[in-house]
Image 1 (cartoon, helix red, strand yellow):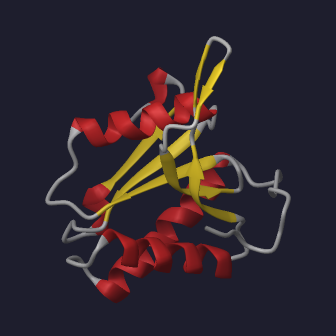
Image 2 (tube, rainbow, N blue to C red):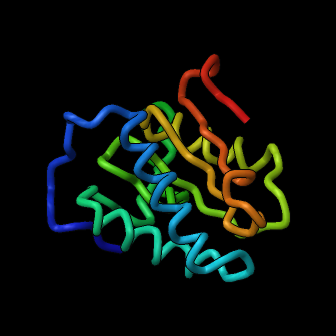
Length: 142
């Protein structure tokens, strides 16, 4: 899908600033809509909210697999990419499982993006459904 009109990422924003903006925007969306909707609804609303805040948002960003001299466009996609640096994977599931974190970490490693957020909009309180995932193994938090 599309992205905001701005084409270059805002390099003055730190990763923590970007992730903070994403979390605040996600909390606003969750507060307005509540749990129980399809992931696609949260996806569209969060992308809209982040764009309104002036952040560069790309949706459904392809993550090819590189193996030796092969580039395999298998169909993996990051739900949202913010400022070309923070990947966001959205879920609307009963609870997050380790496989969800592994999925986002795989996307980060394949793409080279440094940070990701896993957001479960089905959680009664969104704060309970947020996972920060770093491309550096020592910095992952539950």
